[in-house]
Length: 66
Image 1 (cartoon, rainbow, N blue to C red):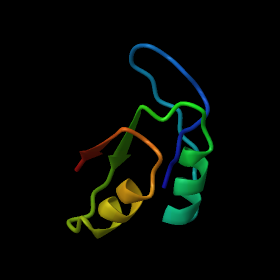
Image 2: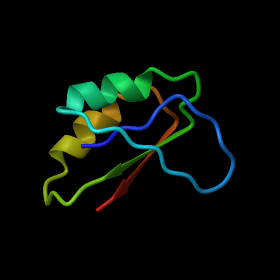
Image 3: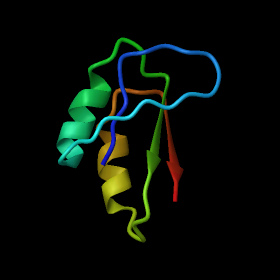
């Protein structure tokens, strides 16, 4: 799993960090003064993990790329 955080850009970007759990990803993603949009990328057929992460993020929009 990879989580990005603590930066502001306009335009295309990617910043990632390997994490060991959904909870660690949520903690890192919420540790940012920004939080306009989050993107979750998964190969899982289940939406359970996406919903858990999405509902625990402090952000305005969450996108799913499956």
